[in-house]
Image (cartoon, protein in one colour):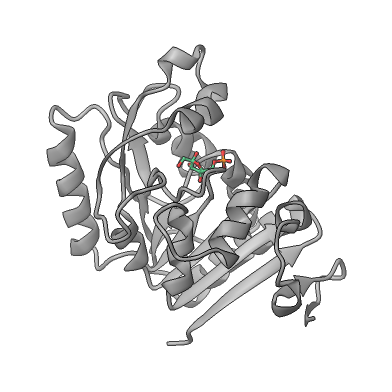
Length: 261
Ligand SMILES: O=P(O)(O)OC[C@H]1O[C@](O)(CO)[C@@H](O)[C@@H]1O
């Protein structure tokens, strides 16, 4: 298998989202039975909109694929308006031919048992083929907050105040944002064949710099991706501003061509 870490810097968020949607579509075309690891959050809305358009245009099908989402809030039932189940239905599942979909059940009677069941289900499915990731402003991936064990498996995590504040925009009141989530662990994510991480905007500058150029450390959980065998990090210029080693990265030009600087 090809191994590589690629950093692709696009002029803007629109083109970064185009790139990630195309990477997913390309994988589905070459390997229709891919087990997709899916992410939520504002970042992914543009990617899913593009995949829906590609599906409607006959350019991609999810019929042979399976999906496992990264995380879900503890306490929210699947039909809760702020649950990630609901997010996925609204932004992707209800609009494409992907039917074998999985998320943790946030309303399970015992969240720890549910987390263990979810991890076992991922293993039984042969682990993730292509894992899509967003990036928290504090460097989290999934809901693996700073100080998470770099070899953790799916489990319950307590959300930091900053993460709850960042996601409060989806809830009526800050107090309504759950304090815990079930999330795939960093070890679970690292078992994926391939990882594609998307981040854009000035709010992600520090996290992007720590992820790519900082030490591998639980202080920035995303930095562990430096040790993954096949990662593509797709960012825009705004998120790339804190990078010091630009000369080593792939800049993606407005004409769509890629060039090594
Ligand atoms: O895309 P956003 O909304 O900036 O969130 C970044 C990340 O944080 C989360 O909201 C929480 O894990 C993810 O869903 C997302 O990938």
